[in-house]
Image (cartoon, rainbow, N blue to C red; front, side, top):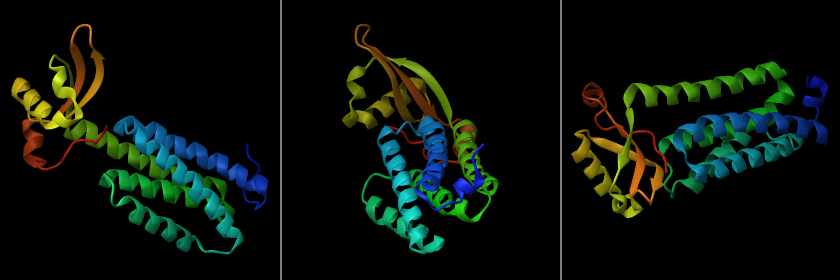
Length: 213
């Protein structure tokens, strides 16, 4: 069990203790929730690095008597200005803010509030993200694994042609396809396709499936 006096201290060892807690929280949120559902390796690095930097800078800010609100606002504004020009979905932006918020909470909140109080706040954020991902994946979209024989359409530039071909073959409006495996010897690939059933299609006509690479 961690020593409360160590967690609440502003010494180097206190910062390292809080850093360890923050790192575990980031692994759960980014590694076990975000990556599990999005499969976006390129953003895993970004989220982890931002979370670590935000935590360390926030810890230094505490020594300079900069308020919690100013610390969070600073990194939130940075996130908007820096990432608004790249292919960054709304859900990715939500995870970015969650990463920033949790890192600030773990850096400064542990100095003010009891350990278990901060742990509850982190748990609420992680649990909310997990439940929302489960709802989007299970309740709205259907997933099916198929064997596909036209490898030429798997090229990134032919994504729309691939979706159209899959829609024609299956009779469903395929919204997303993810490559699971390619067997060049047998000249086929295993794809995971996402589509919406008729009832869901009426309710969520313009909504896209969970994004991935």
